[in-house]
Length: 143
Image 1 (cartoon, one colour):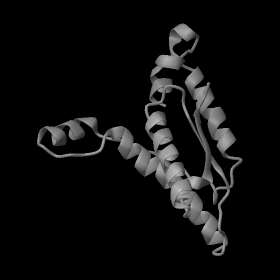
Image 2 (tube, rainbow, N blue to C red; image 1 turned 180 degrees about the vertical axis):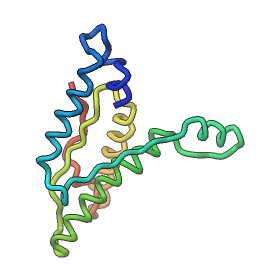
Image 3 (cartoon, rainbow, N blue to C red; image 1 turned 120 degrees about the horizontal axis):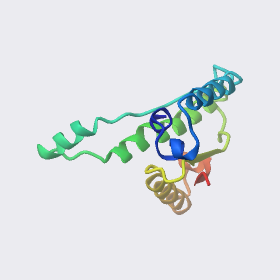
């Protein structure tokens, strides 16, 4: 969104984007979202004050990276909310609908999340227990 509104990176003027086009795209996206059942649609986002993080680290605190924080509090929260909805609908359900996570190409969050997903799948196979990460069937980037 930041890149779109500031006409940077993939939305740069030298790639043909004008000041009006981001608003047209946002309008189309909002119109698309209107088709979703509002009781089912959930949105998550995470913002990190990087200056505050650097200050805390400089003061000697150990904190996770911004990428790890966002992955935990967005991507993992999405997964847990999805599972909770499945069990709220049917408390005897043993599985929820499969999930696929798609990250923007070049997104910093992709590799750490993908690695954690692979680790969790291996742990699931080794321990043969139930693992919420098992509901995710694929994690990839856009092309």
